[in-house]
Length: 75
Image 1 (spheres, rainbow, N blue to C red):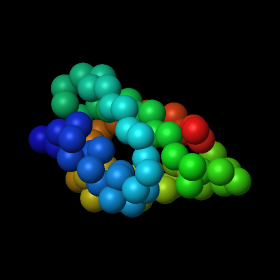
Image 2 (cartoon, rainbow, N blue to C red):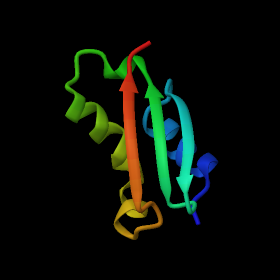
Image 3 (cartoon, rainbow, N blue to C red):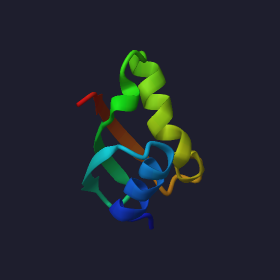
Image 4 (spheres, rainbow, N blue to C red):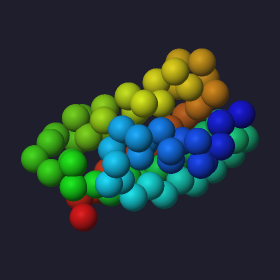
């Protein structure tokens, strides 16, 4: 099972200034995330979400993360 800290760490490795807030939405494999980063400035919502989900793709594919809701913001 993937932990909130593991998810946050992967996101921060890809987006070093990211402020990551995670919520377990049930079962340890359904997560809600809010990610705030200056790196999102000028990027479309789709581009922002790709930036966050890319480092998590192996967990998403293997369904260790079965559901992942995401909100991205700039500071």
